[in-house]
Length: 426
Picture: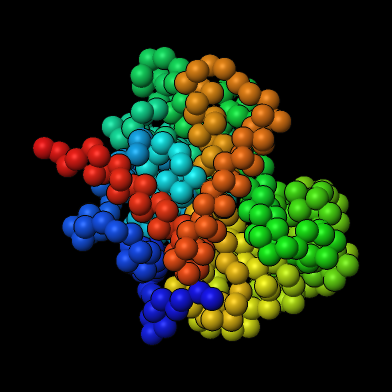
């Protein structure tokens, strides 16, 4: 039985409030001083910049960008860059904090960072996107380096954006620095397996959770995935290849449901010729994104945006397992409801850590100029994630707490141990 943590907690206003609420819940199970608990609530540094970009028609438009370093106690900070109109300082702070716990949980020598630009990347031409990226990268040069902060792609960015950032930094330094970013194309220092890493990691954690509950036959398990971008589509494909039934998926256009299981390779081929969306795919019934979350299934994988499972719909979730592919998809009060209902949640900082793990592999390969094949990448990814799952599950059982709190307990303890050992300067 899981101990109820805070039944009266109210819905929070934003992702950073959610991140702090989760932290406060977990920190009570870590035997460290109150001043250290307070210390880890704060980002180490926050950077904001307003910069001009010349549009193709010759006009100048101003854009705002952010980069937040939450912690560097365990090593250089690591985290993605978002291009989205929804980017806010609040969101970036939360994502940086979650990255700290994610890296610590899977025992990587990184702290957490996050960044972004307030922009709709689809509203820019390719040349405008390149100019925006290069100008933003030049503003970040004082903050980033292979030994201080290593950006990566996230929502609205991709390997090409990382290539432009790497080139901008390298031109500034006067020599090529492939280790400055991860998520690059392979032919300029990127890693095998990086594209599939987050989605594949979600399914590795799902399989661990199912086996933890003595569920070992893939054909008995139905899966619903919210989001069919890089994370959701690769999770769906890997689950399909392992023999699981992916009965529903969705993107911004809505969802598709087929009780017998969707043909994921065929659906991915369809999106390639249909503007990247699943809209109009003929071999499934249409459902809304809201309906998709409450479909009858064994496993629900929210792999879209944060704040999708809330107190307003948590009582309607019919899945037995929730495996979080997105960052912060479940609010704290929704966690209480899911826990009370016996729904097993594998939290984001564990379930979607595959991306940062393979980013770490890419960084190591770039620093050594020695590269691994895909089989080696995936074997090491599975080893790290299975160990992290087992450690989190053991902590949850020891303290009789839910998996999210257990994951943060492990992570907070590792960061606090590093701070205590290093001391506080000066």
